[in-house]
Length: 121
Image (cartoon, rainbow, N blue to C red; front, side, top):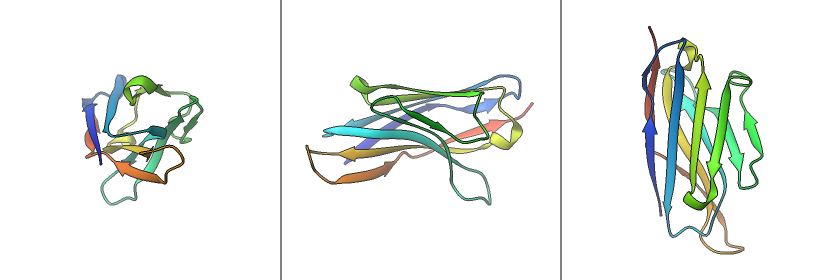
């Protein structure tokens, strides 16, 4: 099993900065991809950004140029910062991790509990 601790979020002003962090723990051998997804009311969950163990990043078009995802492999932690978020960024943000529990073992996908982010003045 994998446990997540998500922090950050809450109420963010449109001209401000949105910051989130997520730590994954458990009997983990490797977390080869971690990322953030979000789900707005009435909409499907969508990608925000992902990062591999080798720090290869992928961003949704909506956050490119304004968002940064970083990672601490030793702590299995990721961080997300989005500058000047738009009201459309209001959503529940979920941490995601692709995990192996042993070398050459199967990969499993886990989700955090979600953190509400509201972008409003």
